Image (tube, rainbow over all chains, first blue to last red; front, side, top):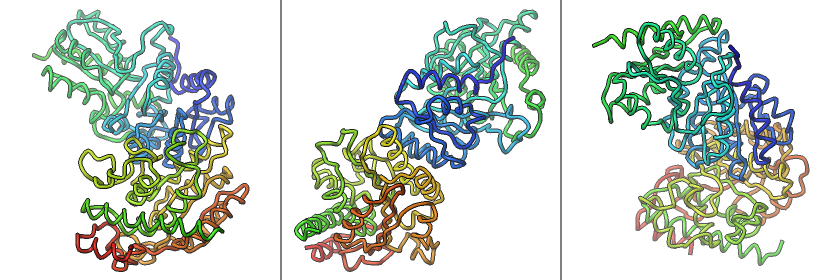
Length: 312
Length: 272
């Protein structure tokens, strides 16, 4: 299976975007090699701003650039972009509804060896709670490029959550509809709906295919937009399957699982189970070992899905 | 410097002060102290220095202004209203429900407000961004940011100062409204940011020290800043908080307190 890190796809997508639109400006805080904005910096040095290790200033400068009509893509690791600069994002970007796309790489525990200090597991929750903010978590490289194009076209701030590790390429080509706010149904089934985002979509699909052999038919959705969440699709799945399992490489508090549960509890109360990081920090380790440690493998999803399906 | 011009700006500054007192008094809430201290700087910027008016409010070549000390919104609103950016009647509704004149400036609600500010320490970064955009687009507009002295305690200010020096933004001017007071008291008691000029210099800025309630000195500083090449300029403007209203002058308690009707009347006598 072909694999690609979403950050690599991001770097390439930015270069393409820069060729198409002269108003695109990219900012980074001394991590351009890791976030892959270095590709844009090489292609368009006059439209790249490296602010040094100063994420708060990066967001403020992006606000100033956006206030003059630029469309800014500001990148760092998720923990610094969102965590360090949260209040600047809130007050200087989201409050005035400026065209700044915060594109954070190294989100979640698959950051790996750098450890818990560098593994953002709260970023979706934080960004989702801010008015005017759109939150997108692409499931592979192909959809990352689509997301970059879509967020450029979107008027206002957005958060794009990207990963460090290579993950399977889910979409064979670009011939699929990627609309912000519309989840993608990858597999139809009546027994249980699995709604996943980011790097958890591929393992969810794998689990669903394995359960097929046991006669359990899962629906699987790539919920790439966490905000605005696709209520229509969630309610359709809730009515069809009666149970929803969410999967995300993020804290179970405030992320995709919470967003889905909020919709269900208010509009179609059904059991919702959340797979994610259980209110604890990550640690150093190889990405695959960490996914095992924190219960985010296809086997974990399979077992939870099977048990959940059998629950009366 | 044309004395008539100076007299005209001083007259404008007095008008701004009267508007500040009336607006904050009527609202029963707001920040008079730091608005009054900056009135001469604001009058000089809006009625002389800057190429910025209702006629060119959308012109990409216009000069930009960022009120980094966003709590001084009343002086900005007064300047914009007197310049004709919006109906002066708006000033009667400061801080009221559904009023465009929010407690701190909202660029989406008020014509002429170029940056939404209020949370301290962020405006200089905006100004750096605006200055970088001007350079990218080969435009020769200038960018002005008004900073509070207490605000210099925010670390982000120095991130922005470092970036402005690094990028040699000589079309950027930061004016520090150095009134010496912050909410909890004297800056030197709470957390001294001295030596201010040396800090900016260390980050690659030119600095000019002036008396910031003296219009002549303010205009001369702006003129001098235009001559600086390759470095941004910080104007350290020593001011008096509450300037022009005797019972408010140099008193920290008037940072964020509105005068009552009697006090408004008394203040207006000082500002007649």
